[in-house]
Length: 434
Ligand code: HSE
Picture 1 (cartoon, rainbow, N blue to C red):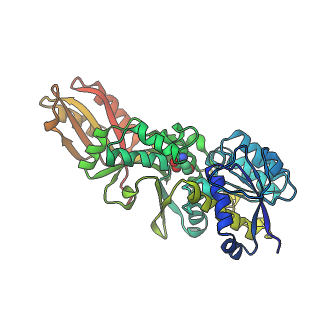
Picture 2 (cartoon, rainbow, N blue to C red; picture 1 turned 180 degrees about the horizontal axis):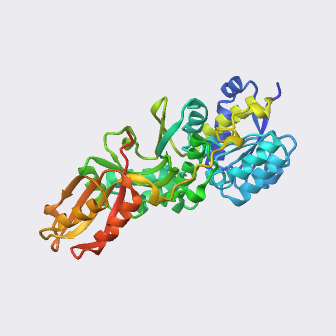
Picture 3 (tube, rainbow, N blue to C red; picture 1 turned 120 degrees about the vertical axis):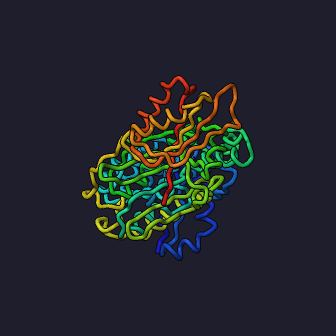
């Protein structure tokens, strides 16, 4: 059988990795796919020193690939929203299948792209868009297809996890670690996407859609970054038996779906609390299977290429199949997506770590306890660091039971009005993940 012809658009970290893996593992890949997968054209403006493209035709214009009648599958690895969208829609219009690693594109424009792909009977595969090399989309979409998924929670930004790990373990500065992540090719072109949780929210949006069968709704995801975390809170969390991770959480409740990315205290003995460096991990809880955990490299040249190439194999196998009987893009049939709403963060429920900088006076703890109890907030543990009294101020650290966020907002507003409380109250969400 003739090899399937692939055009790679973008020869950066992931594009170079994809070319190398396809070349190195060509024989194994052909044995799996049933025919060879050949890179017939590459669109790039810059050579990649880590990738010897040999005699493969190269063009500087991505639309040469999309309009090349020889190409069966277009691999979109240019990133960004605008040009990538144009490229993918044109490829679909030309009847080509698409493989992409572009989480921003799928999270923001995926509904439109999948609708067009269905119209044209082509596949848009996007395994590499979430958690790099971990086949978590396939696991949720196919491996857990018998379950009603209850929740999922993941460390889905390698750069952020690398920064938190290096800061905690080696005391390195935020800027220093970020620079290294950029040099290693982990960080986004705009690293605020990593640090502010936007990249994780893109990925969470995609995971939530395939887990719950809802349209992609990135604009409704709550996003809070890691830049404001302090060493003091990292250390207090440790003293309470927790680790702070930047977590994406999607949970189904009767009222709606929680979709939130924020720093989170996790019990230190959970496996996911011990996922360090650039590694990613996603926990998925289904009603039949219980909790499952998927772990691996979330970024980098060949880990991400691993997912791109797996998609190429899947698409190659499906080329001759009936489009109506393929695995749906978002796991559920497009006409069976649910309109269960995404909840605003004030309606989400979690436990909370609060750090209150208080005057070291008699009765302060009683006032704090009163404010919390008046709002039905139950305290799980409390710690007052007398040894750290400075200028008559003492940090009071407490962890609450689970409660709707609106009540914590009200409590914090009341606490900050007390004469004996100085500074803003620090609030970090807590998840037990059990
Ligand atoms: N910037 C992303 C990360 C790359 O650090 O996880 C992989 O999506």
